[in-house]
Image (cartoon, rainbow, N blue to C red; front, side, top):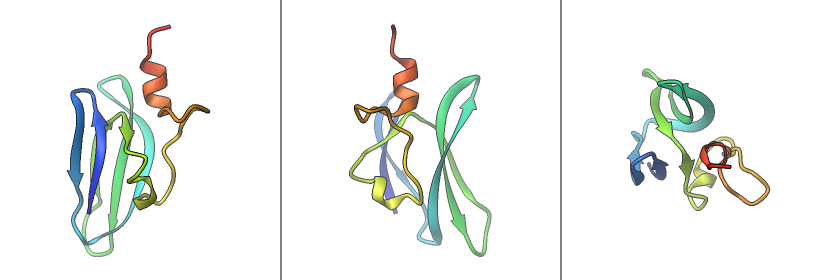
Length: 85
């Protein structure tokens, strides 16, 4: 399964193995910076974890077990917090 995600360097595609039955999104910090973490759950193996994500393409969000936290205008909460005032 592939998801288009935004990382600090721009948009990219992340791959998860087919054995990942569900992919969940959670908030967290990497190197002191707020980001999203995607976790692929597998029945017979360790979780597949992808960190340092700022957003998931809204067209791929239906592939996730839960929703990306977003502001009222649809911006990822993580990106919104990074915007200068």
